[in-house]
Amino acid sequence: MGGVLVKLIGLNPSNETLAMGTLCRERKLRVAKKRVIGRYPMAFRKMAVERLKGCDNVVALSQELGVHRRLLYKWRDQLEPIEDGEGPPTNSRERELRQQVTQLKRVVADKTLEADFFKGALQKIEARRQSRSNCGETASTNRFEK
Picture 1 (tube, rainbow, N blue to C red):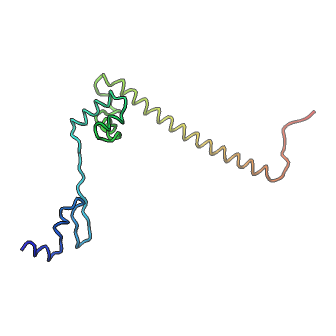
Picture 2 (picture 1 turned 135 degrees about the vertical axis):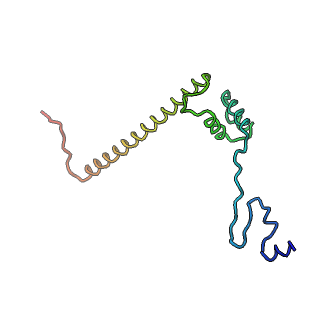
Picture 3 (picture 1 turned 60 degrees about the horizontal axis):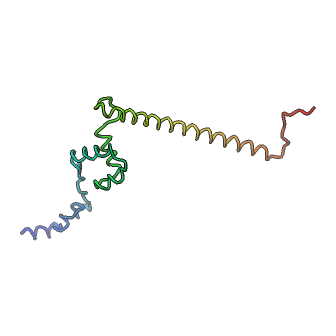
């Protein structure tokens, strides 16, 4: 009777076990598979962050652990927040340096924006001067000959 019911409704049992999810033919919708949250256990993350602290080659460490390099940095930032002043005294120098790097990056970004603004303004002024000088008029000079 179960096979008859399936044929009446129009569902294919093999579609029910697809990796993509369930295929609903009546509504033409494909339901996505649930995303796995927390793929790596917290103990593994802590171990990876501890190894990251004393590591010279982050790419080699990430390949050894089988995780992406950016994920290691993300875990580090999650487990050791930069902004809070709390934490073990052994990391206070590192935390202080990270805060300083963040502040310097902001300053460099601001200065870059200012330089780009002034460069654009200077280009506009030079373009105006060139367009005025190309009109064929004699240029006035401030030099006085005696």
